[in-house]
Image 1 (cartoon, rainbow, N blue to C red):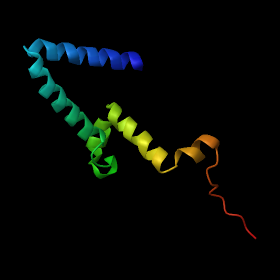
Image 2 (image 1 turned 45 degrees about the horizontal axis):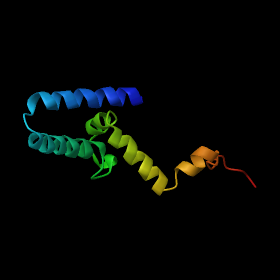
Image 3 (image 1 turned 90 degrees about the vertical axis):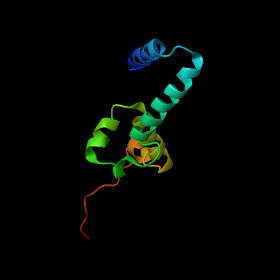
Amino acid sequence: MPRAIVFAMTGFSLTVAAFARFREQIIPLGLTVTMIVCAIGGCWWPLYQSPPWLQQVADAFLTAWAMEGIHMSCSWRWIPDRLGLRPSRKRTRR
């Protein structure tokens, strides 16, 4: 997975370098792409408020994975999952 990220960012960097003539042209282009990826990945609003098709698109971006991890760590949902302490759904009769 890290190799795929490196190759994707290298491809993006080469594409930007092909179109930008000066260093000052790279910064607005990079910021625009960053803001779009953050919006799609759920950094500005929760993904569950997005339409289902956008949620599927967001799974392709690392920002969605990062926001899910942050959300799980803030809500403490990851601790029971990792330790096998999920509550049982079975009801016991008395």
